Image (cartoon, rainbow, N blue to C red; front, top):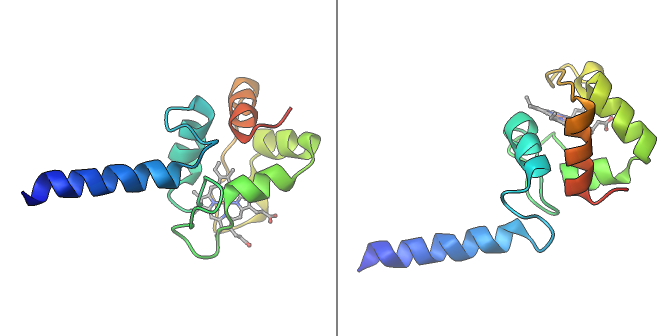
Length: 103
Ligand code: HEC
């Protein structure tokens, strides 16, 4: 009796947390999830695992496109000692931009 109920509840929660614009199998989202998700919240209003890390949906979308591309290519982490330096290829940047709905 209890198990199916729990599955239903977590299904509803996952659906709700995903948000309208963030499809779970979006390749750009998957990239960010894998590389940044252990510290940063990704979807709009998702909480970050690491309190100091800002929500990426808001932070990355607030950057002008050129800056975003530059930062992803160069590795944003260079300025933040707590953050590993992770560099994206141009294909990966295109996926991330598609996920963030940036032209
Ligand atoms: C090990 C944890 C960790 C990982 C992994 C991580 N970050 Fe961060 N990130 C942080 C923390 C902590 C801060 C806040 C640092 C500060 O304010 O000094 C931060 C800050 C940022 C900022 C704000 C920079 C600014 O100048 O305000 C951006 C953008 C960012 N991270 C993007 C990313 C991206 C993109 C990834 C994945 C490629 C990523 N982070 C992976 C911990 C992490």
